Image (cartoon, rainbow, N blue to C red):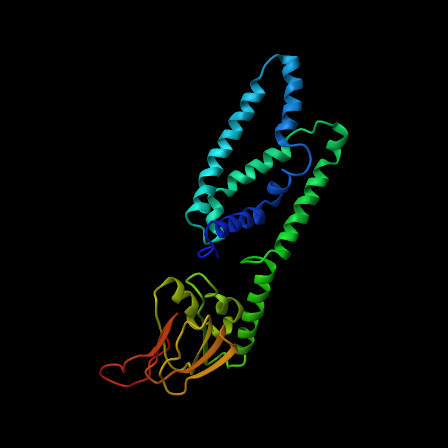
Length: 276
């Protein structure tokens, strides 16, 4: 990301974000007659016959409107702070409107206008495909391939355990990454909606018998193996991905995304309790 990249990193992330959503907005400015020239041709013909410059005034109003929409957000993201592609959502609607305005402008040549939309459509598809396949960074092909490879390895390792007695959860590099993967890909290991409860109902859950083990898919190595008997750690990808197997003791475990600990013995007795 651009936390350490300075202005250049912010600008590159901004261009990637805009290009991923509307690459033709960047490309059509370099291909064919500029927008203002196309509109000026059509509007000059109308003005010559109607004797008015209302079209030019409307065009200037649209340009100012889009500039006031796009420029402040773009300047802030480049000069101040831009670490996630989602931050560009403040200016992307304006960019898309500018793109639609460009695509809807009349062609100065009727013969060329017949082929204009296939050309522009082919340009959009080609640029979007090249951008996705060749540009490095989150949400692009190389990053998604790495994500699929790493989590595919983790999910395959988890499937080696008995789903009837195993609960699987995942950690990640931040609060927004990969937490719900077990409930989607390993529903048989997601007992009593544990994944959902960790996300939506509180920071911790209790895991008790008859479950026998907790399996943690630890991407980013953010969870230290708990100091409990029988804990096993298996490094799936050195320095990146680890599987932790934690036996469930009689008193149960208290589990959160970044820590696992034994529950204290229940007061007033040692009888079995149902899983929760």
